[in-house]
Image (tube, rainbow, N blue to C red; front, side, top):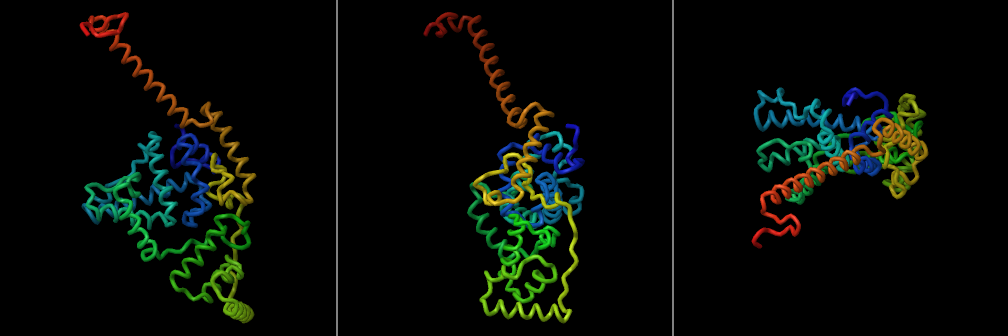
Length: 342
């Protein structure tokens, strides 16, 4: 492959390379993950998110090695061999799937990896978990889910980054933008934050959430009182809206934008998405580019089918050789195919 994992250019090329390397069923899941992933990742391509997850995994691997194995050797460990991954599609797929597992859990990658490593090591694993071993399996699912539920409530103190895409000036009714607003209210409620302070920060200063959104968490009298307070503070110059950053239209592409197969009529993220037309158009362009470069719409599936055909062919050839040997040896009758003396 001429393109290295870390050297891809624009978003289009990254999606093309993803289709060439990653099984289609995993690409199709990207629109579902938009509704669960941590908001910081909502406008980053799945390709870049997978690399980001891989780097976070490496750091978590080193920390776990230092804590549970040998701190003197920790910096020498690599966790992930990027050179091997560049030439081994299966390894990249495992990392991709592990990143998707993290997105389903709705945490920052650092927090998810901290939990996953600690869970694995608490169970006295001999080796640190590989990316495809981070999630619960059939034997550990009950314990994993129980501990994760506690960790997510008690152990998570992070707040989403203030991305410019979340400013009201850039609001387009995108699923990722609505998800951000819902999470901010959820986190504030969980932390027992002052709603007036949350409104000062999110309604006025950072200009991210419309005031009417707080009607879902406040009684009408309280909401009206807080609105009056905000107006008075603005008039007095106590509250000032922070300047916002202008962004290019492409910066509002959600992570699933243009990924072939991610466009699904029954998906909540796609149902009323204002980007649907552009998303489908880009996906078609991606597939055309993939076919031009590889000869296939789905090169991963084509490679798997070819490998299976070759396996079947070798198996038949091996059986033919065995049959010929048995026939020449007189063990089998050539015409009847029965064992001599049977």
